Length: 108
Image (cartoon, rainbow, N blue to C red; front, side):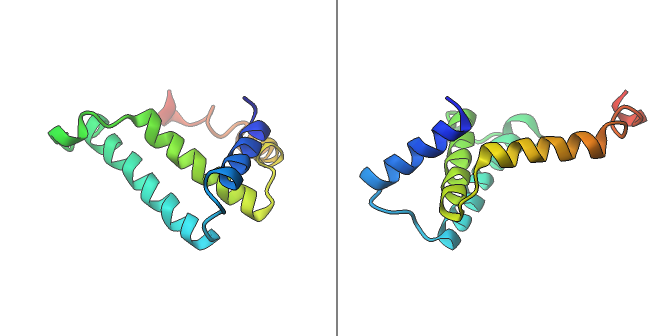
């Protein structure tokens, strides 16, 4: 599935199953909540925090997909073509960081 297809699929789902998009501000709050759920798994599974028994069955992939879902909703609501935006962002990072990471002693 391409990013464009994902945007279309989310839009179709919202219109048929979800009734309508939540407001942009509500979706921003939901995005923050979903990122927090990813952070909780990362801190407990890969960081120094101990993992609670209730966290052990949490699916990181599912939580990351929740983040992606809300990002796509926000893009759709605000007219952002994520494919174009991603290509521009990759180009920006490539130009800006072409030598930076190669010369970073911390990464060697």
